[in-house]
Length: 620
Ligand code: ADP
Ligand code: MG
Image (cartoon, rainbow, N blue to C red; front, side, top):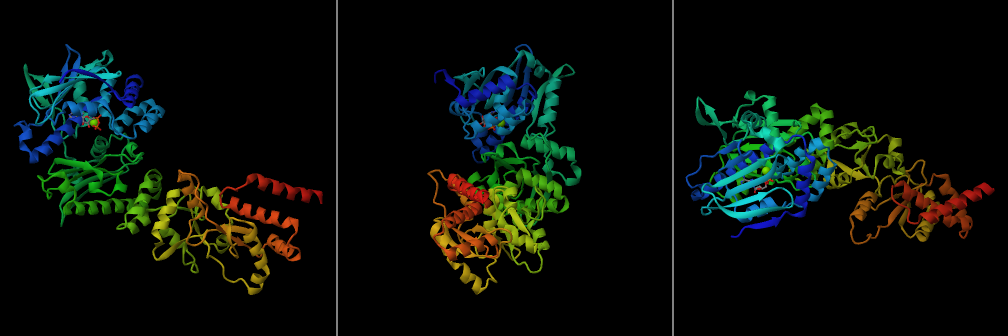
């Protein structure tokens, strides 16, 4: 194949530009990234070699070698991993095949310069960190199973890279960094040794370097290669746990919770799991690939998150190691095997019970967690029927009995319910302030019944899907059918003409009926028991791409105790053609629309009607 020069994809160009021109601190993470790639490459060929031993070519002495070369000012990171073909190298090192690159670039630009290197690591474009220290990078690679010919990729990180055939006798990849003048420090063997200790001590494969010893050159292993998940809990300290978490996650913060346990019985396995303290950066757009790592007797098998935990727990990081799984079956067979399903359900219970314990014992910390990662639990409460109850216990809500920004659990709500209250009530809307003004709350306040205030659109989906909690129905208070009792027949008869008038004059009113749920307010709007609530409808309308969907007709509930309502009824009785009637009816309706947090359909007409009214009043 001829030598070629190819252009980087546009977004990659921008990314490289940022890496080269705006990253000054934490340059040393390049080494961690390249070692991590070398280690991944070894894992891959080792795994494939289980079923296709010919790929190993009698070269299974796994090794990542660092070769600093003072004379040429180069640092080479060499591995005997799976290697890359010409095609893969163009594909993997010339494009970033990810849908969320745009968003990533934007947040990279917005982020503090200090945080950027970590973001890069977390995003998984680690290879390009090379250009933080090198003004030219050469990659020599030969893929496992390919003939003796290798491929040479080279770039100065500007707009393009070149690619040509080359001879490479050994399988694997050499990444040769032509260090910049200001990155000469990375030729220093002590410096390299310390960096490996700092960032890559947990890498399973030996990271080696030639060192002089009594005039002889020997190959020294720099990393401890600790499989701490296999050790006993009592033998591992927090520092080690945290360092391993950072190694796995590329997160700079310590984890919120470390879960290390050994399962025995039906399935034997060891698990070391972490709950992050902050939302992992790469989860923000739901395109995360990295979940738990599955090992079988220390051999890395896969890190696809949904195999070991349900999707909604994708924020959990860690390692699972089981001696009971078959080593030499294909990934696909393994992924769908019954033993793995058992491990999955065990891990899920463990994560959920750990969170529940955190909630019970350190509520403030749990709230911090919930603010960062609660969205994933909501996703779970909506999807995971098997653990529905446990997830419901983990949900938090604001309510009329919490201060703004403070939460209650459903269990505590039920605990507080007065004897005559049999259902759990909620109201969803755009914000606590709007919700607190709602006339719908009046009768609940009067009875001192608590109402959950759902301010996150996801909450309403979740609560809707739960239906009940501990045998108590979850009821939206903006639905009809609450508090209609105890209205006398006389009252009903007296106000029927007014109700009919509302229905006739106001097109958006599907039905009008009396209520005694209101105290201070004259009217309010509710949905039919089986229709969408107002907030759900607003949400749907926002999500609607092709034009607005027709709003459903609402039910106008009228308070017969209110003097305004009584005055209107009297007016109607006297003269149903009175010019003031229609304006007043419309004003009342629009008021109810505003109070539920929706928009008045015709704001101009609303203002005019109000002005007319104010003027009549002023002219009296
Ligand atoms: P990530 O490791 O998150 O996939 P990187 O930018 O670090 O992202 O690497 C991009 C891709 O380049 C890797 O997924 C891998 O396919 C390939 N690659 C990088 N380094 C090596 C290597 N030493 N051996 C084989 N493939 C490699
Ligand atoms: Mg990488």
